[in-house]
Length: 260
Ligand code: BT5
Image (cartoon, protein in one colour):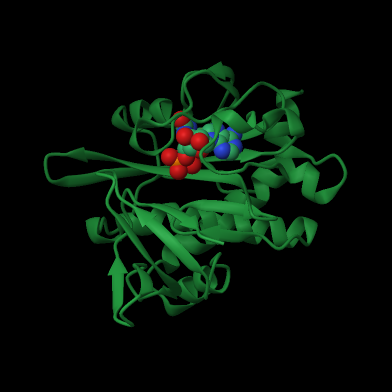
C-alpha cells in the first residue's frame, strides 16, 4: 500500500489537511482529539488498521490491516444546529450508498439509521460523534468503516448482523482510495442539504426492509414489532404496529432486525 496513492486519489477534493496512520486505535478518537486542538472543517484522518475501532454503545468495529476503509471526517457546521445531529450518521450511510452505486453500479440499501447493506449483509457502519464546549457544538466527527476486501469481514460469530465486503459484491478487486474519494465527494455535496426534501428522499429510497415486518430493540431490551413504513421528515422511523396504529422512533440506540 502506498501512502502516495491515498493522497493522489484525494488531490481534487477541498480537504485542508489529511493525516494517514498505518495503525491507530480509533480514527474517531483521533479526530475528536484533533478537533479539540482546532482542526479545520473537512480535516480528515484515515487509518489502514484500527486496534480499537468503535461502534455505537461501546461496541467494537473490526478493521484489520490492508483490507478496509476506516476514516473520520471533521465537520464544523457553519450554523451548528444540535437538532440536526441525528442526521449525520444517515449522511454518512447515504454517501457510502451513493458512492457504491456510482462506481460499481451496486444496489446498496440503508438499514436505518446508519448501516449500509449489500445483499442483505452489512458492508459499512457509521458512527457520528460530537465535540462540545459547554452548550456549544464545536464539531461533528463522521466516522465511516467500509469492508472492502474479504479479509475485512469479521468471523460470523463476532457480528450481531451478517457481514460482507465490497469485493464480494463486485466480483473483482477494488481500489480503496478511489472509493474513499467518491464517498468524501458525496458527503461534501450532501452535508449542506440535510434539511432538504432531497436528502430525506435519497435516504428513504434506499431504506432496507420497507414494507417488511421488523423488530426494534432498545438498550433496555424492550422490543417493538411492526411493518416498516419509511421515515418521517425528521428522519424518525415509521412503523405500522399490530393494532394498525403508526408509531415513530427517533434515531438513537435502537437495534433493527428483519423478522423474515
Ligand atoms: C457501527 O456501529 O456500525 C459503527 C461503526 C463505525 C466504524 C468507524 S471506522 C472509522 C471510525 N473510527 C471508529 O473507531 N469508528 C468509526 P454499530 O451499529 O454499533 O455496529 C457495531 C457492530 O457491528 C459490532 O458489535 C459487530 O457486531 C459488527 N461489526 C464489527 N465490525 C464489523 C465489520 N467490519 N463489518 C461488519 N460488522 C461489523
